[in-house]
Amino acid sequence: MTLKPHSLLAGALLAALSIPLQAQPGATAPAAGAAAPASQSVSPAAMTLGEVRRLDREAGKITLRHEAILNLDMPAMTMSFQLRPATLADALKVGDKVRFVARKEGGLFLVTAIERAD
Image 1 (cartoon, rainbow, N blue to C red):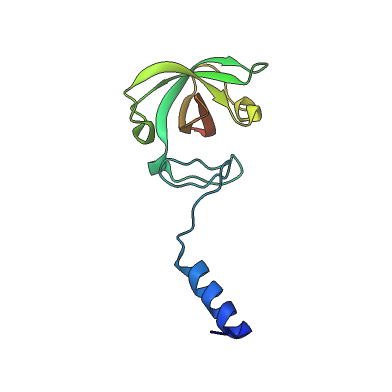
Image 2 (cartoon, rainbow, N blue to C red):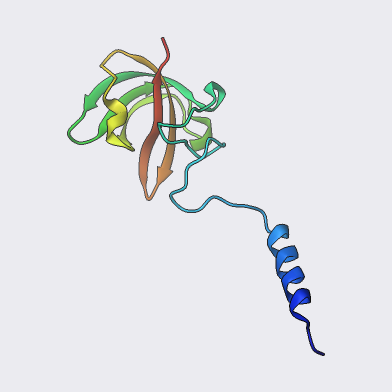
């Protein structure tokens, strides 16, 4: 059986269209379980409410008292997160009420988007 070039192209295109799109490692998008970079807007419904308890700008860490984080199946508590990027903390201070997006990557809990809630 000899396949013609246009048959191969049509088959490859059909196969490519039938594969669901998936996020690449390190890609960020404002979807459930994923986070958007600070430059993108994130739906408030996808964010968790919290309060800044401590900031360590040099280490790029933030401690938040937060409500349950649904995408991480985590109850309300106070805990520290790495900031990605660390510049997310630039406009924040201790005591600020915030909305944020958190995710787990390589064993680390990260905040990948954050904004003042007040």
